[in-house]
Structure formats: structure tokens, C-alpha cells
Image (cartoon, rainbow, N blue to C red; front, side, top):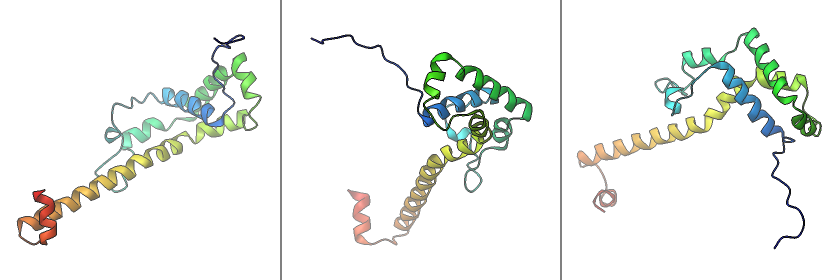
Length: 152
């Protein structure tokens, strides 16, 4: 059915976002942080803005020595012949870029949590609005149209 030879699938690393995701996974492994199964175990939901829990932030903040180990591990992994062929195609890749990416990994992790923070905040707002509507309904302080929403 197919004429010619089918080439085996190949992972193309000549993509800055893909390289970053691999570097971030190396960084995360070096932090030793277990992410568990939910962001509510990582973020402090009792504080406005839902910041990282202090214990999580401390664990994600690598010392200079740990950061150097992480950089060395990343360089070692990316020095593979197959990786190097792809990395030569990416103009941004250098040791300085790699180090900068690792130094800013915590900030990138924070930004990655922002979408969840926004969704959670919106859910909390919807819950509060629903609670106020239910309370008004219990007091008989809603319009007839709003009342129909509860009975349909």
C-alpha cells in the first residue's frame, strides 16, 4: 500500500519550548519535590493570591551548589549525540541560556500555576455568588424570575 521506506519516528528537539520542558523536568527532579495529585497541596489557599506554600517554595529554591549540579546534569543529558544534532539547529541554545533557564525555573513554575489560580478564584467567586443568591432566596428577597431558576 505504501511505496518506499517508512522512517522510524523521531523526537525533534529543535524546539525551544520542548527543550525547556525537559530542562524543567531535570530541575524539578533536583528539587526533590513530590508534586502529589493536586495544586491545592502546593498552593496556600488561605492566603489571597494563592501563593506557593512556604515549604514548597523552600524546596523549589535550589542552593548554588544544587543549581550547579542541576546544570551539570542538564548539560550531560543534552550532550548526547542525538540531542546535539538537534540543538545545533536552535539558535537560542547555549550554556548561558541553559543556566538562565534553570535560574528562572521557579518563576516559570509560578507562572504555570497562574492559570489554575485564575480558575480556582473564579470558582470561589461563583460559589460565593451562589451562596448569596441562596441566602436571599431563604429570606424571600429574590425576584420571581430568580425564583424560577431554583424550581426548574
